[in-house]
Image 1 (cartoon, one colour):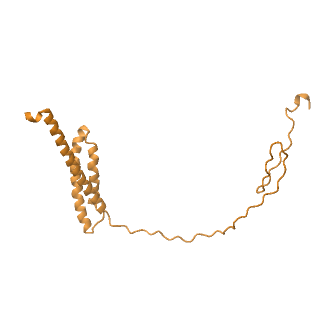
Image 2 (tube, helix red, strand yellow):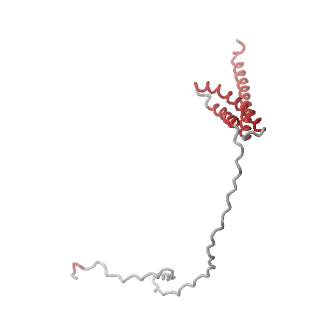
Image 3 (cartoon, one colour):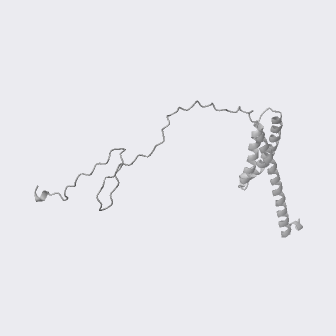
Length: 171
């Protein structure tokens, strides 16, 4: 080799080969200390390996027989009872509010009527759905109670407001 083709670094000695798979690794030497090979590690005691056992046959799942079909009037009662409070949220919209103001009491009355009819049919054992019928009846009566409370509060509020303004004395 000539001076122009000299390698910038001298060749390095080959790196030691790592131990074979499963063989213990030698400990690392501290900096500045020569590497001293250590004794192979002792193998840790291992528990005996249990042979694989195939799972036993599984029992078939037990299903309850289906109950009687739900009474359509019970379903209708429950739906009508949910429609009434939902319509109260939209009663402030100008045009739709008037339509909803008529629809809400009708839905409440239908929920109560259909619920009572469904409960009578369910009591005879014709169909199921007692929980839905009870839901319709209870929510229907609660809605009527809330409507009466709001009407009473509105009458008291407007009555006191008119008396403060002196409107009632001129009528």
